[in-house]
Picture (cartoon, one colour):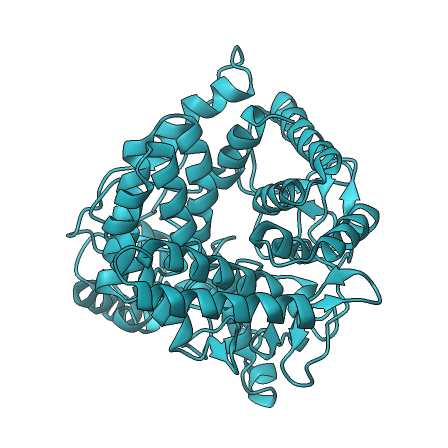
Length: 482
């Protein structure tokens, strides 16, 4: 494992700032052909002799994380589900080589990647990927992935955003307990799953409760780092002057990455200006729903073996459920919103995160009915559910829809009996995926739900093919009863 920004020093900066790579992450993920000290010495010699051809130097000393042309080619005779079943092996990686010189955090068991530029395991992606793996009967692979996360919680103390050294300052939306519960139900042994992974589940709970993520009793996103992101180093260097005038700017950028919503108008004081990001000054409704679900599952997992701890978790869950219902729900609009830490007010940006309280069971029946109505009017479109109804140019805003948010919404609506609306959303989303698959032969990271035939965009990188969580959600929703 390498910390390339430290071990490669000037070379790391020069590569990122060269403009030779459209996607800077490719630099930070590269595999070193020799020890960093040897590469740096070679770079110093080359510079002493004059101009350095950085592309040639890179080609001599580095290997890209994804070889050019290393992609799955669709079988035109496959329908969507056959295609996805055929794709799983191409997204599956064996246990990592601990001798590889790269930023990869080596995992001891096989795992599934998202695809495209994401050639490592990611945290919340894996939950939605797991949905499809369970539908495909790949329970052994799911157990491998759970074992990897258990390993991370034992060795690191948390599950990182992704398994790269530059992600060791943050996590992602905490779905591990839900992954354990789903695996236990799928294998017919929920008690066994809880027993196997309970220490790791409790370790994750401590991480979210004993770091600055727990702020005045509610959860927020955070990052231990406060400088430019290593994976987008040159991009963030362009913000250095702004960051000097706005302390905490880089931490807020990084915290938005922990949310998975990087980036969205949810985190911005001015929805069109990334410079106004304020992630760490927001209590997010979705994160607090995930914490509620974690507390409930911990209460269930400890009920037989540690009744005292079970009661404590149940009490924490009830306190959080009350806060979600009383503080995050806006009775005037009839929807759940994020809260401003600075003044306690609800932030009036309608996002798909407002449906998490239905998934988590935190809404009253009346709140759920009003939330379903608000979401139908403001977010439901021809191709599925909008992420927000704001067109900001960020990828977690209109016109984009994302698979995990469709799934959460469908489950939440069903939980409260809004089956017709859930079915409408389910069929529209599946139709969007089918349409793009027929046209391109691919499943992709995100979709344009205003016009499914138009390419989705926005954000810091190009639309990615693959794609782990889209595949998983499609397979799960495709076999659910309407």
